[in-house]
Length: 136
Image (cartoon, rainbow, N blue to C red; front, side, top):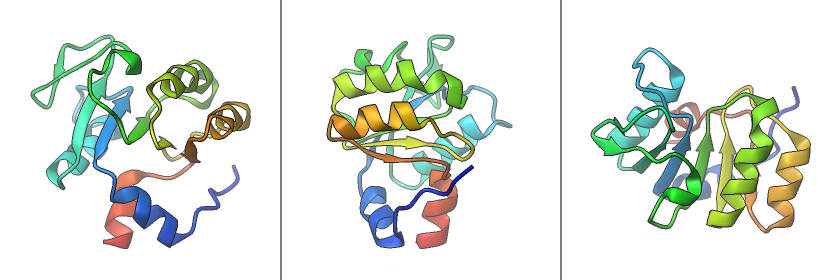
């Protein structure tokens, strides 16, 4: 899988954005889809879980879809397999985030192009926790 081309300076600017909707956030503390957003929450990020199979994660209300989240969102952080990203990105575009962040191992060029064409920056194949730790 190719590497995301963002520079460290660009990633630092993205990491300054604090309102993050996490698609595929897990209740299982052993999964990256739980401990990564928990780390972000513990480091000052306003995390909103998006998972139709949960009501509450980290004492925060879960939403079935991104478009159900009532507040504005800066970053949509995605923990779903690459082949499931397209419908998520189509939903995310309606929410008009500044960035869609596809976690490590996730890359879908067609879906990413759709987001970029809508004026949304896309980070792919990177972990927000790892980048935050590396650049902080």
